[in-house]
Image (cartoon, rainbow, N blue to C red):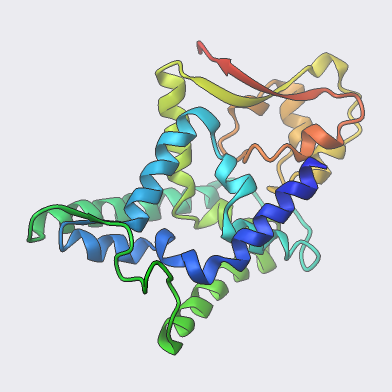
Length: 244
């Protein structure tokens, strides 16, 4: 039942993407910074950072429109995306982007203001043919990695939002805040492999459970698919204070 609700939320989020896309725009936040405006994407990215201190990457698992699009592509390429050095690409992109935002803001003009609906039409992002051309260009950017490399490859390799949540999770852990984790009783694991096969991120969950690493994986999106499929209830959600 939980996975049906989760997937429904992802699909609805994706269907609303033409309305909300500017609130996730890495370009508009730079343009707004040049005018000293805190726009919708600035507010959304800040909220992601703060909430991830407690909830990790729950956004990715339940509400991300790009994630919903990629999960719709599982039938096209169900293979797990390869992990490793490619996962570092998104952090390199993110760092360059953050520096660009800061520099642009420093060089910008006008007083600092807040405008959540900056560059939207009464809060709606896509309202013209030109905007739709940009929208489908973004769709192509999100689709190609998943088609070529497998499950949620865009999330693994080039997502500009994931680093906010990874950073927030690390900050929360450093501050010993209560955080949502998927805990595992590895002694009860029967190594059936269902958890790994069900993971939308294509992670080797069974291997991490056996090594006791599941709760610390930065690529885990807290979707609970592994929790729900486990026949022995080895995996469980936990909201805990971590002291290490």
